[in-house]
Length: 479
Image (cartoon, rainbow, N blue to C red; front, side, top):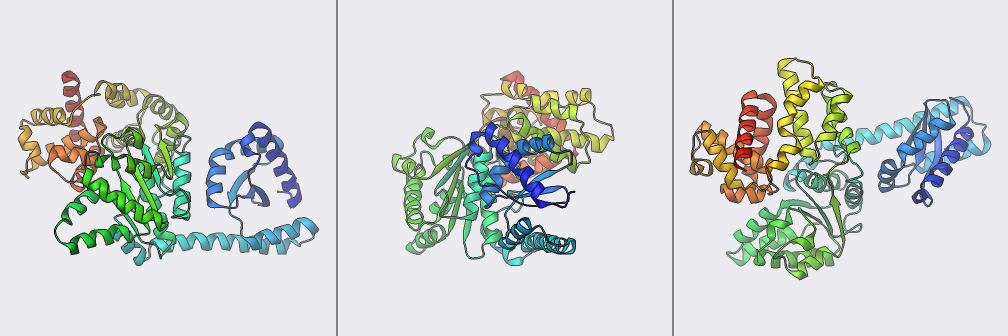
């Protein structure tokens, strides 16, 4: 690499001008060349929010322009610049007289700075206090911004969520994230909570489903002490995260309580984020004054992933499994699975399990054979299913009764059948886990456990896969 920072500064200015010519939205962007080393050009994005936005919106184009202007194998990296680094590099650009040893010393300091940040983050995850706070907040550590693969369909929701986690109570309060099944609403909601806990030891966060919020309210209707305990639990937090607010339809009493909780938190500038399966105005039997409260902040939607996003998701998962899929198979899956991320991941899990247990190399023909029954076309034919119909089909398959499936018997055959019926209800309908729980007389936690149990079994058991496919076929004949 040429040892002249000015050369790379000029190169950056050229490609930035080309970006602005081709994309007017970049005209007022705040991106500044800082330094170049090891075939990377470091650009200051000035904030975490801008860093995420620029990476998603401009990075691909910038790297393409870079290859046009330079024969070197270079890469642009957005980061948030430390003031000392900026001052040092600025002086270097002005006088261009720093010795090679001094440059190496400066670069070493920069590398140490970045390493210390990374190591700090790693150690924070191991901190017992954070683990305890996460448990108290009902958060799952798996849901992080790093593990969420962003695409055009989710970029706004992702960036808004990240901005909230950096400045809770200030940026976008309240926030409603809405979208269909399997698109990542819960992932983003809990990522907000996890990021706040990881970076701020003063703020109290609580994550609950709307069902849990409802049950806590009902259980408090005994004594004044119980009512006060409920109010203290939800009105003395700094960040309130409530999942699946569509569950509150037709529940006037709990809507009234949420209205007052909302007002209390809003007036004291504390953060609220909600998720819903549709825009809030489309909810039936939700009071107008509560709807108006949701409209005070920002409403962002999650749409089904586009082709490019699906490719990103599969490539990440494929890398984790030592590249068991070739690009032809990845393209086939992304072209044909058009429902949601959950279905895409389910297809990958099935292919991965087949490869792992048979040691047979996956080809496009074998992929089609394995995946065809579960492609979106079949799911389209399974529309308008009721949970009751799924229960009846599952019971018939296992030679049981619907009463057995919905009852409390715990022998192995009935438990497996019950878990499969719950899993299929979640996969083949748009009902939330809370709504499915009503049909099975189970709470949200039990429903989630059953779904996760079958998901794991499906990845390792050919019998479970056969059971699921057979019940789906019987549902097709009924529908």
